[in-house]
Image (cartoon, rainbow, N blue to C red; front, side, top):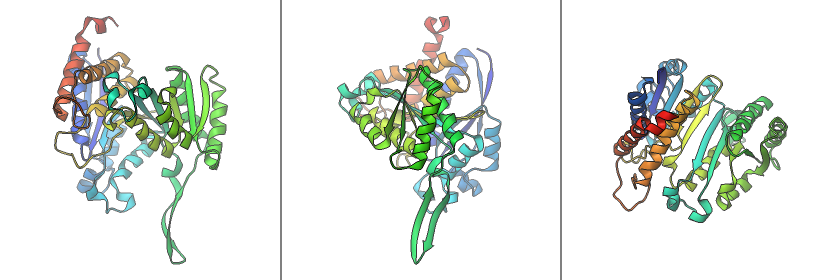
Length: 368
C-alpha cells in the first residue's frame, strides 16, 4: 500500500507521552508491513508547553498542526499547573487548538468486549453487547460562551458561564450523527434539557428538522438526566447518542465505565479540513513515568485516525482486532484487574504491534 501521511504528534503531559509512544509503535508496525509512510512531527502542548514557552499552545505547534493531515494527541494537565491563571491552564491549549482547527464534532465510541464484560461496573447480562457512539458537539456551549469569569459585585464574588448555541452549530453536528447512524444500526438518540434550557429547545427543534432528511434513521429524544439513567439501566438500547458539549463530556465518561476502564476508550475530533485523535482519559499524573498506564485507548485512537483521516478501514479494523486478541489472552494493565500479573505500558504496545503485523500479513487480510 503506497502513500505518505503527515501526522502531528502532541504527546502533552502526564501519561500522554507514554501512551502516545505505543500508538506510534503500532503505526510503525503498519508502515513496516503494508507500506504507507507516516511522517511524524512532534510539538508541545499543555503544561510542557507552558514550561518551555510560557503559553499552552505555542506558535510552532500551531504550525505543525496546520501542516499535518491528522493529529495524534496524548493528554494535558497536572497539579503543578493548577495555580496558573485560567487562560494559561494546560487545558486551554487543547481548547484553543479545537477552535483554531474547527474541530466541531467529537466521536466517542464505547463497546463492551466479551473478554472484559466481567470488568464492567454493571452485571454482565445487562451490559453484554453494548456498542454505542457518543457524538459530542465540540466548539459551542457553555465551555466557550461569553460572558464568563469570576466577578465581584456588592461585596460578593460570583461565577458566570454562558451557554450559547447557534443554529448552524447544531445543524452540522446533527448531520454527522445521522450520517454515522446510517453506517451502524440507524438510530439516533438526541440528548438535551429542553424542559429547562432555551439552548436545548433550539437544539431539539433543529435536530428534529434535520432528521427529516434521514427518513431511514430512527430518532428519539431524551433529557440528559434520563439518558444518564438509561445508560445504566439499558445500555444496549443505544446506537448513536447526539448531544452538546458539556453533556457529551459527562455522558462519555459514564459510558466509559460500562466498558470496564476509561483507559480503553478512543476518540476522534473532526472538522471539515482537520482531525485530532486522542484517548478519552486524562493525564493521570499519579502514574506518569511509571510504565503503568493503559495505552489501548491511544492505540485505538490511531485506528480511528486511519479510518477517518486516511480512509484505511481494513487496517483500522486490523488494529482493533489485534487489541481484542491481546485482551482475550488475558493481558492486563493495572487498571484492568485479572488473574495474571499486570503488564507494562510498553509491553502492551509490543503485543498489539506484533498482533497487528500478524493480521496484516495474513492471507485473509490480503484478500480483502
